Image 1 (cartoon, rainbow, N blue to C red):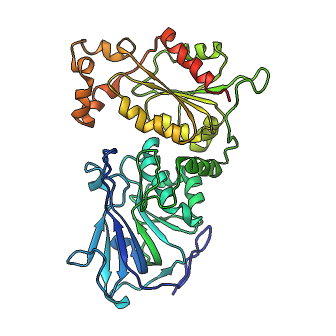
Image 2: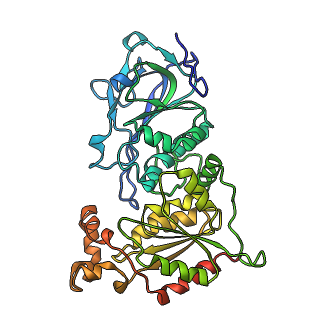
Image 3: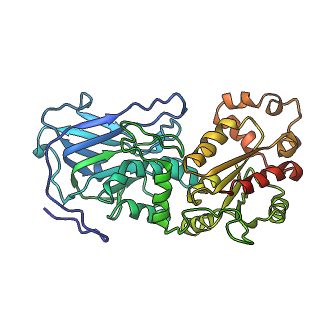
Length: 409
């Protein structure tokens, strides 16, 4: 049978053995409102036919959780969102009784396969990490690069954008599952990706049996992007040293309207301040974040860049008006602590939000913002998430000083 000659490294072999399929479908987590999708692990004679969107499993016993047709269907995107899933390519695992009942191999691989989707909310840096990159790390890091990635809902620009990460996880060229006529054969494989909470990784017997942490993930990213700083500056360690602060600018919603005033105040307090907007050049922005000691931003995807901060760096999150406690803590506050970063948060009051210019003070957005959260994401997206903020500098200054103090050893 023909062997695969990848541009980076060949993963060809002819070693296949019979084996079963097991699926983790326990996605319930009472503390996490988003159910996790199923993930299936296969072993034995596995034949992946991208053109048929099917993974054939030679399975003489017929056991392993298949339906009456001998099939198991999954949409391999690592966020179980009913709104998103219809757009995710459905992949079928088909149990067949003998090798003759499966298509003939055209390419053999000596490493495991991982089939997953980059549909959904990708191209949002938060979701790129929570829905793809961290789950991919959880699923494949233990394989030390000896894994073949097959991506459905393939986006060439997305693969290009995250090439350093994909190359760090796999020694082989990615296969475009949406445009491949071969039948790829493996002895082990995964359909879907294991995930934990957003930017949070905890020990778990199935989805994280090796007890990876967010510290492991941040170290992995430093290696993937060649980031040089492992530790933040220590205040007072060098005479005249100014700690570096990066303020992430936003041009859409939740803008910091008096950003220049905040930057000036921070400079007067002793910070060396840089203001920048996160763009598509991830390696360049990762290096900029890694050069900083303090990252300041209004709640939003830009705060995900804390993954590039050096250990003991400081995250200062400006939390907009509207009962945002849970989102602030679970999306960015707890993750910062789990990454061995110091964390400071500032809650905007009624006078600092642009919502005061749009709604009367007896509106639900002021009287009972928690009620908007119970109405779902669309209600939030149309109100609270559309505000801008203008900070009261006198009120905010102590939080800048707290960020400075956090850099003391």
